[in-house]
Image 1 (cartoon, rainbow, N blue to C red):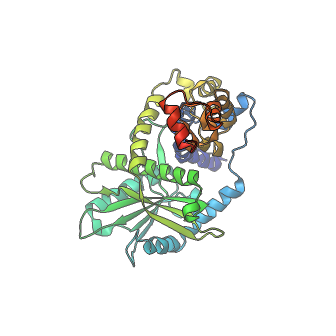
Image 2 (cartoon, helix red, strand yellow; image 1 turned 120 degrees about the horizontal axis):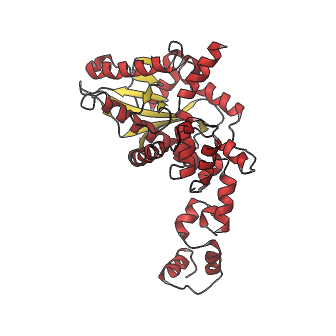
Image 3 (spheres, rainbow, N blue to C red; image 1 turned 180 degrees about the vertical axis):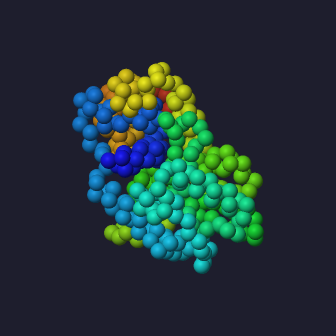
Length: 357
């Protein structure tokens, strides 16, 4: 029983899932509060009479775990081959460091504290001795030196490559692994955007950790990253190299500032209790920012969708339509589509974009 409790405690300390939730809609205050305070969105949904429906399928979780575990078998041979084929690693690269927790498929690391220590030791070592750097590292754990997630902000990066050119500083590149299929130009846009956003969060977190260790002059963090998906219909990896994460990092930096503000806004010492009714109500009372991404993860999405419908907001038709219509209500856009005379230059321009004039 003590061992089970220890495993649960280690799992709670890994806040990766909460960061991923937040990254899917970082501008929504309710989502931010939920992530910071560990208030489950399905619990909040039940408080307002909604039936939770976005819990991840255990089959999807199992498949994701199998896919990721398979990438790291035999010193990550499959993943290394795919990375070399796309130029993320040079041919015949060598060296693999497995920092995965045993509960996550690793062989040697037993606890969060051990993983944090080993990750810091790895960063210090490769900064001091670039020639000792393993070219591929699984699951380094980062503690963000800010109070952005309560009680502590811990992240596990899926994979990191390390390259050293001409005895210069080692360059570390962040990778994000997802089980959904890569369909080239037809890959689901929301899934792509979510993967890029999460990679940007992890890249920014790695930069913060390196700064805290005083290694900014010894280690370079690549401005781009790589994404690993599956080939359709298989568990073979499909690598997308050279993903520009500049915008996502800026977004993450701003988001971290907002997370820190929320974390500092505690009003009672018992706010750390995720089942605190007052804290759940605080999430429900927070401002929201509905988008189509919410439909993939948030159990409060039906409430926010209805609120958007009530005010005739174009967001109910998707991000692209919202970008086109702006603050123009859906009903007014329909009138313009039906030939109504525009009232101003903005409506005239909208009619032009709609192809009516």
